[in-house]
Length: 339
Image 1 (cartoon, one colour):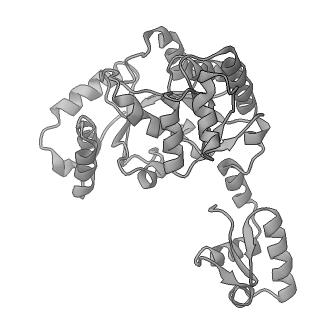
Image 2 (cartoon, one colour):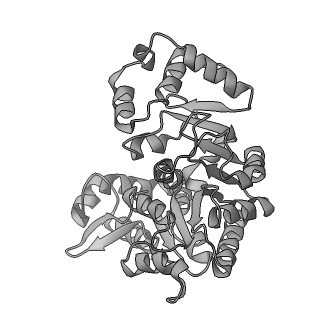
Image 3 (tube, rainbow, N blue to C red):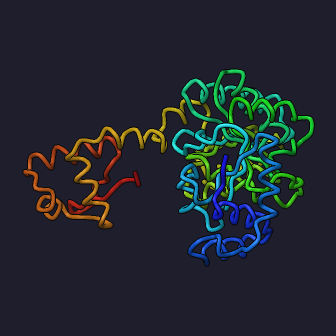
């Protein structure tokens, strides 16, 4: 695989440890190649990667997920990959995270949900940590599904070490990805940074079991901040392993779910994107008009759409049933959710 001078510059930029400085430098140059005059360090890294089956998807690469550019204030300048980067299709990815000290209940819940996700064609994203993460990856693979491991270290460093075989299997059958250059050690401060990517890659995040101090709640908070759908499995009020999940539900942060169908059958982003493809010309026209205003009166919508009163009334009623528009008081309408 060949890399342009801009790609090589971005690989060098990925070694910058200060996220704000890294982002500022990325956006300061019309061409990243303007940032550096010597690419020897990047060339050494490229040779190292090629010898180990690692490749870089830079910010300028057409394979780089578009939603990361618009969603994150500090998007990765490079994604270092082992496996199939096409799996990072946001509409098909759901994150499954939870405690490292998973209980029997947590194991049963995680296995049940992940099996259903794999059967429905969803790609399971997690962090390859012990506990729920490990179980999510293993279950997805056992079911013949796809899974993505997002690491808080270089993709050439299997962490935790007892998951080395699992991470290798994910690289062969799915994707192992990190924003950190190969060779980057798994320091503790990197895992919260990693968690924002786990949620950013997906349309939704499921926490199957988590205590008050569980790192999985950081991923849950990232999902909320990023406007992703958050699903929480409730647990026993006597279980400290579910205390964090129960607290999120009590605070109305995330939807409580008790069966996989609550997610697979919900109006998720995946479902919405499929629905968008199926919109009629008239529905698409009405949504386009409504999306330009916070709300619009029926008479104004009638004039802009070019439809008859009967056609528009019938269309709006149908779209309201499908959850595409909301009818407000005074015969005003608005888009129900962003498609």
